[in-house]
Amino acid sequence: MELIRPTDGRYDELRAVFNAGIDRRPAVIARCATPDDVADALRLAREQGLAVAVRAGGHSVAGFSVNDGGLVVDVRPMQDVAVDPGERTVTVGAGVTWGRFDRATQEHGLATTGGRVSTTGVAGLTLGGGSGWLERRYGLTCDNLRSVDLVTAAGERLTASATEEPDLFWALHGGGGNFGVATSFTFDLHPLGPTVLAGLQLWPGSVGRDLALAFRDLMETADERLGNALVFLTGPPEPFVPEHLQGTTLAAIALLWAGDVDDGMEATRPFRELRPEVDLVAPMPYADFQCMIDDPPGLRQYWSGDYHDAMPDDAVDVFVKYGADRVSPLTQQLMVAWGGAIARVPDDATPLSHRSARWVTHPFATWSDPVDDAANVEWVHAFRRDVARYTNGGTYLNFIGAEGQDRIRAAYGDANHARLQQVKRRYDPENTFRGNQNIQPA
Image (cartoon, rainbow, N blue to C red; front, side, top):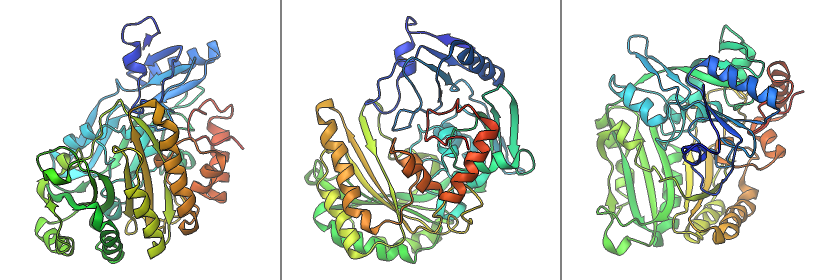
């Protein structure tokens, strides 16, 4: 275990997280390369009365990966990746990001549902559920878990699986980092790639409403192999964007076909018939597509999200209005169609409720200047207020910040939340792991 304190030259680099709006100064960062290191770090925190945060990819928009005056268990040194192509499984260390994960599994033409941003950590995304392009085909990331190794607050090393610590294994399918520090994960893999049909289509923002309605109608009956997102964004100054669209509001559709490329060409034909001004949907390496919407670090972030059982025209109008009226040109407004494999998992099979939701909206505010904090946060809140009548009350916690216990309970539903509290009482009765979407012990 390596301890990094504020006097260390690497301290500022190692405490920084993806959201530049988070500026916290822990007393010590414990760089952990083994489960024993994690146990030692937790013992140090207990002895010195330090609050604990756990850091992997650092993409928590609420800044749960770091704290003020406490100890950060930094698992980024845990970088092992072991693919078993015969068994179609992979075991990865808790510090691995999705970019590294996907490159390793794609050497064998295998994949599982991973984050849409390659710098996201495998650990945080999985423990929070795991939404990604392959979810309609293969379920959420947590639905593909074989086992999780973790260290409890008391320093006990455990393996959770369907046959070992099954209640804990259930809780790790979306219950977050509430029960221990995960040190490795084993996942099922599925045949995919290395070449897939995927990419982005762009239209001028002026046709945004018509496009959004068409997207909704097409995705209502789309094959579950079609991963998707409707996005309002600002045209970047890139060679693939015509000059007259750069710096303007664009409506975009991102697509990934989880199957044969030729079949995908036919399945995506209705989207091409909408006549995008830019059409980048083409055969490409899956791992490259997984990096396509990566945002740079160093920007300020505030996100939220809601589930919808339907998206009537009035709800689409609200979505489009806020997509066109973004406060920051860096902000994106996203809508994703769910269904397929996500909905086939019963609500009580994992902590995550509202599996039958058909749509997810995800206002994703991004900006650079602290003076714009209030305006951008209010943009997210205003959208949520206006779209609230069309939501079903559920949410995906990895998409939101620190929005309070009511939202946490809503993500799980009363029965699943109560069960999580019982598991929490068994494995973390003192609530050592509370720097997260916290589940309080029963």
